[in-house]
Amino acid sequence: MSVLKRSLLWRRLDTTGTEHVLLTERNGLHARGTIIATDPVPYTCGYELLVDEHWVTKRLSVSTEGAGWLRSVRLERALGHWHVTTAEQGNLDAALTECGQPLAELAGIEEPHRLVEARDVDLAYSPLTTTLPLRRLRIRHDDPGTSHKVTVAWILMPSLQVVPARHTFTTLGEGRIRYESATFAADLAVDGDGYVRRYPGLAELV
Image (cartoon, rainbow, N blue to C red; front, top):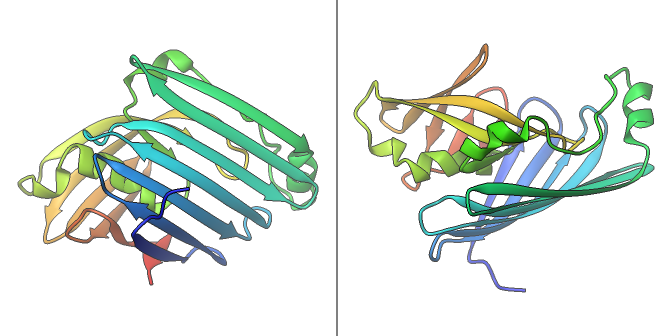
């Protein structure tokens, strides 16, 4: 296992939880992260991410675990196509039902033809993966008002269901970028390397 040189830690604002990631930038990005959260059920998530020199995602491996269940998903992109493998043990649906949440779909992939466009992955509630399209498209260096629409492979948490999603990023200037998806919008504060410092309503860098 390689040693990763930089550490980032975010505190969740919407629930009790954190994301800690170790990373290094060498011919792209290599990151290993741990997420702990209490909503919609208490769970722990571990992930490993590889991004190439153009900041296009090559591979993401994710596992989530809670009381009585364990799920994992692995996404690999090669020759313009995504390959997704999944596994699970126990019953996450039962855990979600007990706390009044909708049943989770089995970890898998919906509308795979739409994911062909995706160059980025977006792990739900993860500020780290929000950085990927920002760096790939050099959005932080755009003139204020410039917008980019991107399709991402969005991994829902903690079910690890994979769905295509459309995000819009608009440069506001002074280290601020507006993120929009469907009816949701937030003005992100990013550092000089494009990593999210504050994601209103979700997380802030400690």
